[in-house]
Length: 640
Image (cartoon, rainbow, N blue to C red; front, side, top):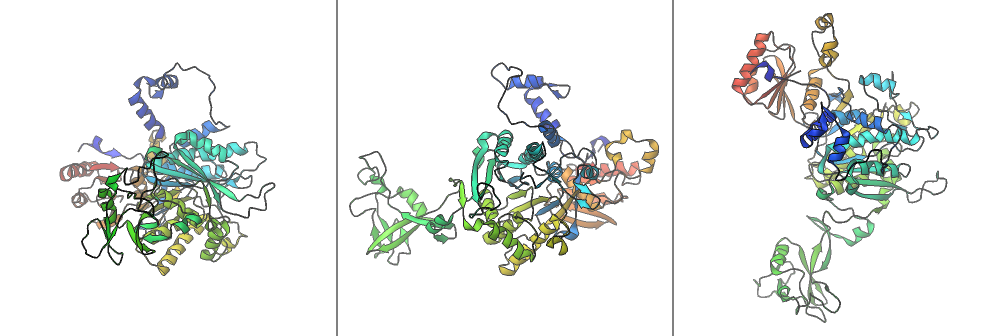
């Protein structure tokens, strides 16, 4: 293996702009000149008519929109660092909790989770004139930017109030949310859905932003959620009793609801349950169907659907064959008409064998009923009113009872989150919450996985560690920031489930925090460093970073997901990591015995990563690469 075949990892986030330019150049080569887009030429390629310059068009714009777009496309060198001592079952869990700004996080995980998320939940700070909003400029080192942007001081992280007196009141909020939505869309699967919680202050603007990013045709609906039936007394004119849930799909043609939300009236109607779920009973006899004066479901008009069905004397067996002498023989006959069954014989046989019919004795006659289930993909109402969504009882009370102290204002309704997750995902799907707050989403997923037993939904939660006021009860009880509250809620919810039902589910979560790169500046800008600086910087890795830190950044740089199983082995006095068995093998020791190569190559790894200067000299380095080529020729070798 020649040295030029060894790949040096760039340890940066996905370059979205360059990727887009490359895609456009393949479709329309004439629109890319010296690596830049000729937008006028591109416009013409995408139009059947002559494009007129300067013509007005319908769009949402605001002061700062261009900067918001640029913020979404900026590359970051920031990374995630694992915090094992605050994790639960780190080595085995698939759940992820990330402390840090969600814009940076979305950039960091772009490549790893591209097209992998089924459901994204976004409950941003409402633009009320009092709540806090995020700043967006992360062009230089992460910590310096957090300080300069007002997100961090020497004591901890804080956010910035968006007062109504601010002349950019709406613009600041839009500039905050726009790049986050744009990057979030990339992570959705083709059949994925994003759900926003919002009040009326920015509902119209949010709809316009999402219409632009997702396409108006992918707007599934705007749901009114009644969470406080009595209304809020603080209102001036109307006592607000509802908020909104805004649903968008990535591709409406490929999206189906995975479940159905039953309101109280429907719960009464669908009162039966079996191992397939809830159902109601409807007559097996076909209803009147056809134009006026003609009923196609009469025997005379549809004779093939008129046939006998046999029911055992104890009503437990239903069949199309008369295999017992004392069976009841049932025809689709009413008191006045010979009608037909709902299905032809072949389909009826399949339904009966699937246990989709029941027989009942009524007034001395055997009646057949079909189990009518709500199928996924059917229409869902846009007005959700259910007392279980009450914010005081299903949000605040549940959290306070679990934490034993007041920790969080206005937490999400646990039961509302469970219904949204059931509606939009199924077992093994990944759910991402961009503003996780008190970690209601994780609590809901744990509950659902426990109830459904076979479900293995995974969560990824992101929350900036906003400081708790020292006068608050939560602070006095040891919670310094919102992440402390969220992480503890997940632990307590897990323990409660274990104590009550103890199902075999994933109770753990891996904690990561957003931080600056593990690599020194020399790694990114060696041309700007002088020779004496190069001699001083013997290693391109920062001194306070561990092998686990490096492994996490490499996993992300190679586009692997954070839930992969990690095994640590000691080989020839070196620490070697095996990620997802042989997907990645990595060793970041400063010196490596060349004989380690033989042992590593036994598993035929897809990728191997070392430090570039791990080997004693260039001869050992070249010999190591040649050895890998011989023992595992399909392995890709990377260095940092």
